[in-house]
Amino acid sequence: MKRKCIKCSKETGIYLPHHRLALCQEHYTAWFESRTQRTITEFRMMTGSDKILVAVSGGKDSLSLWNALVKLGYDADGLHINLGIPEYSELSQKKTQEFAERVGRKLHVVEIKTDFGRTIPEISKIERRPPCSFCGTLKRYFMNLYAKKGGYTVVATGHNLDDETAVLMLNTLNWNTEYLARQYPVLPEGDGLAKKVKPFCKMTEKETAFYAVINGIDFVEDECPFAVGSTTIIYKKILSQIEQKFPGTKIRFYSEFLAKMYPMIRGSREAPKIGKCNMCGEPTQSSICLVCRMKIRAS
Amino acid sequence: MKRKCIKCSKETGIYLPHHRLALCQEHYTAWFESRTQRTITEFRMMTGSDKILVAVSGGKDSLSLWNALVKLGYDADGLHINLGIPEYSELSQKKTQEFAERVGRKLHVVEIKTDFGRTIPEISKIERRPPCSFCGTLKRYFMNLYAKKGGYTVVATGHNLDDETAVLMLNTLNWNTEYLARQYPVLPEGDGLAKKVKPFCKMTEKETAFYAVINGIDFVEDECPFAVGSTTIIYKKILSQIEQKFPGTKIRFYSEFLAKMYPMIRGSREAPKIGKCNMCGEPTQSSICLVCRMKIRAS
Image (tube, rainbow over all chains, first blue to last red; front, side, top):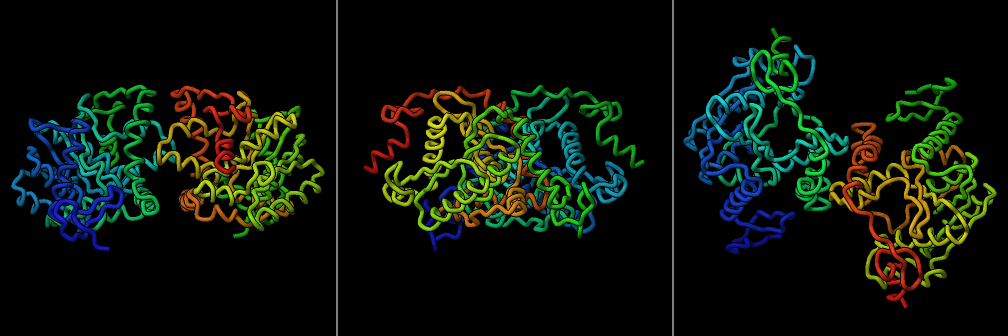
């Protein structure tokens, strides 16, 4: 069934059942950017005077985020972390650099091989565990480090509603209250940690993909080869099944969690004590941070 | 792969991956009944001095529950509610009556047609809503009424882990804290409400089915015709998919909810004020109870 754009009545291919919203390409872009701004405002993620570092992998979410933030007038540079995964990492860096030129903003590049000393596949062999189990830790470490080095006040990541609900479902099925108490789209600055925000937390994966395609953003289409078959991807598929049966489930699951459960769980827990790593001085809950411990094992 | 019973080393067809447990038929029955008793003890559901009314539909769960309770030495009679659904209700009543003779216990029969004045399909037409939306309310009403009439101290229902986790998932995806605050396997007596317990809350559907088959219990195999395609059944399928990928998810989801979340949610809410229905005198939160309101509309 062809629907008409609610703004200009043009026939449109874009229909969002969970919002009961039909839009043409042009008005879709406007809607998407304005919804991003509304999310930023709702959670007080950033203002015009912030200096923002966008973590850009080269995928549709992070490049769309960078694009939207620049279009919304934010002072936003990029940070790309090259993981050293053959083919995938080269392509990711290339597309990110091309996009940086297109938006005319500065791009910082971290090479895990150089900055840490080993590539992700190499670390995986040394650690004898799958890359996904430590890759996030490493990425957060370098994001935080580069934000402070460059004087950035906010780190923005492209996590979308599908990412957030998959993790929320996993943490809910296990009732992992420690993780649930941290699942909020804004983590404040403090204890040597930069402020971190997720302006796409209320956008589905489909929505960011539409935005990227409509705006001619050239992104890496493949998933990270290590993520294939991951727990998160399994839960994404399950949530999409539920969403198809009951449109609106994902956004309700996430929004109601933030409104009702997050404050309750958060309030029931003491804040963790954050100190400084004895080796690198970066924030950690123990005497030596996870990254330095990996460095020791890798040396 | 053929596994051996951990008790007697007989080769066995029964393997429970979430418990990593292999048992022959005889030891399965012993394990199942002892687990039922452990659940009863854990939640202080009943003691040997209680007079128990088991709600028996004629399905595998409720007949297995009746069987297990009698074998465990409890003083347990049955209550069957005939819903007036053509064929399904006649067969259900017949199998329940046959089973009552087998265990040699008293069976009370409520006929919705007589006790309420209309059958479930008739009420559905009058109410213009699906039977599942009010059938539970009616059943709870008559269970409570007959428990008090007969001097029973506890009403036991055959809800299993699959039932409980499907409802838990639904209430969690919506973060319905009102319902979550009541999702406990024991509801205490008070305000004119009989004590209600679910001794199979930690048994999967497969486990009760094994028990029924092994013990030669002749139960109604079909689902209620109105329940086909219901929301609960959709969530049961989804949870079974997850369980297959990650064995133990259901029992962890449920047990950790009871241990960690239930007290938190419960503690954050005021207990609802229960009064008496102006028409029938039964407990209700408003002036006229839901059943009497349906009676008015049906008259």
